[in-house]
Amino acid sequence: MIESKTWMCLICGWIYDEATGDAEHGVAPGTPWSQVPLNWTCPECGARKEDFEMVNI
Image (cartoon, rainbow, N blue to C red; front, side, top):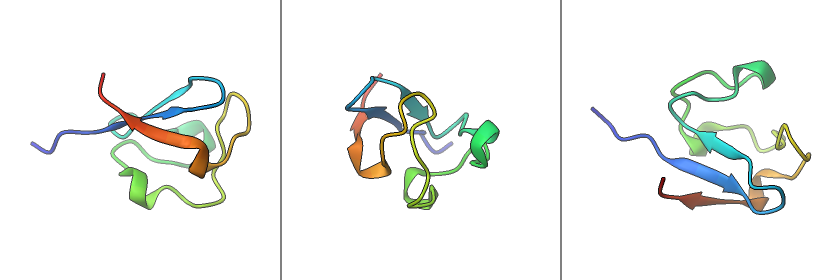
């Protein structure tokens, strides 16, 4: 099984988990960060994808 990674918004701390995705905003569960669209934004604060950093939880 491939380990999913988590990415944290550096602005508000919201966590994107590759395993759960962000289906509410068009990103299916299991979507790797590299395949999240560039125009996707943080659902909490609207930060851009470049404002996220990979974190180990």
